[in-house]
Image 1 (cartoon, rainbow, N blue to C red):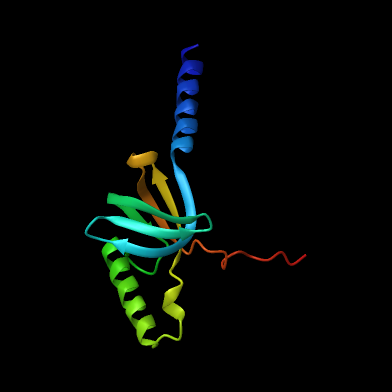
Image 2: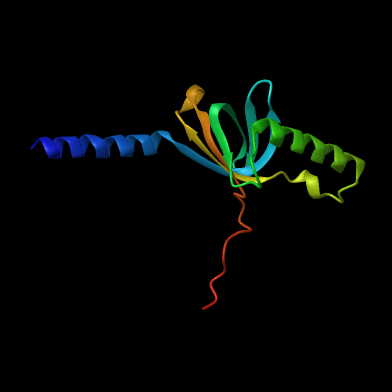
Length: 125
């Protein structure tokens, strides 16, 4: 009986945790490292999230931080203004942002680089 109760509580925790967490796909529009916020452009419009010291970026080349990503975004935008990259820096990076919490307490848990649709394999059958 105790085992069934413990298993039920554990499963309930997983379900509630899954409901509270959110996942958003889009392109990075801007990063404000002073306010610790990242803004992405989704198909539903812009969404801005707060990130913390526990938030991480995965899937990029090498070690990536929000500060490095912000610097890279600023350089790419500057290059695009100068016309030196032939339009490459204007679209932003494809990402999948996973969050914890909801409403005003929603914070970034993880930013996965390469969240666009380019990486999907085609069925060859």
